[in-house]
Image (cartoon, rainbow, N blue to C red; front, side, top):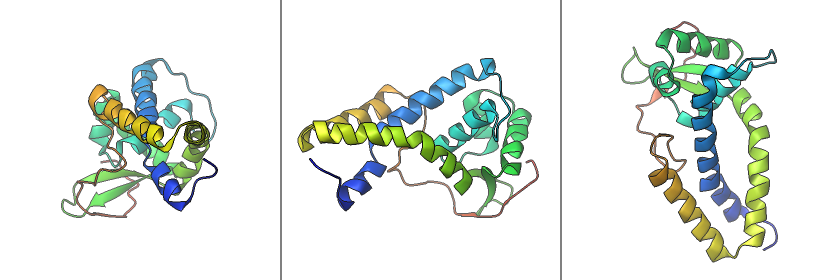
Length: 177
């Protein structure tokens, strides 16, 4: 197989390898959060882990984010507010319940995340070159099974799942909840 065509490129975006890798990574981050020492960059190490968890969870509330990584809501609010100030996260108000806000990653996050995603794309391209179309499709089915059935303790929404959240307005909130 030579280079990917447009249809193949669209399929890559939903490849379960990305989903499984994200689940391993986020599960690991949750376990090591207590032991991380941060270094001062544009993001601290802890902030980098937080932003990856928020991005992987979709659009969690602060409480959902706090529960997932096992910290208090005030501590999560502090971390989220720091990410908001640095431009990696924004709060979007629910269209149906004005008291509820969902965390959304920004374009700045996607620029950061793209660096991490590039190696996964290389490995995926190598798999596509090495495997037949049927083998690659089987690999994807197996990875989806691993992600959905073998990793229930990491509730990251699949890329193909429709968002069950109510419509939210893209209103940036600088205040804590």
